[in-house]
Image 1 (cartoon, helix red, strand yellow):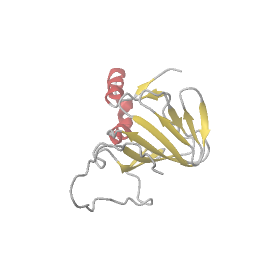
Image 2: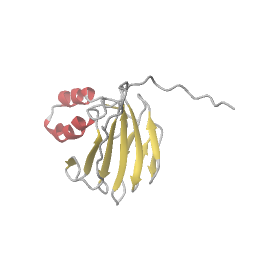
Image 3: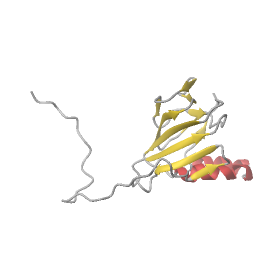
Image 4: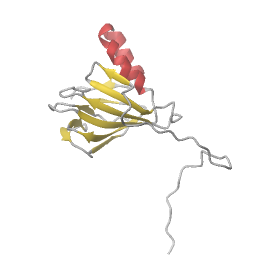
Length: 166
């Protein structure tokens, strides 16, 4: 009996011998960016590290730490995997509480949002594919209050974030 294997992408590594190129990031390392103590971002594998394949971030949100309202991205998909706590996720239709091991996938153009409304901290993995400079977005949010409405609107567009009214 022969099993048919679905097609794989073409090889991207074409050298004759393998190389040592993996890296380990420990879970107890401090956050790469702390947004006012409300949200801590761990840059596990950004677009530079993955050569644009994806960006993977561990995000810790303080109790009642909020989060972005309904929005979508044109250039990338986004996926959420809840590690701990309760994260309220929006799938374009409804807000729903998500708990440990719950997962939400959002294709490009898909409306979504997330927040921590709970009285306990929450932690999740966020995956963007292909990779995008999301650390620029995370860190730039601290300057939003200093921007004019036009500057803020343009900043969101440049960072592939399009908010929608629901």
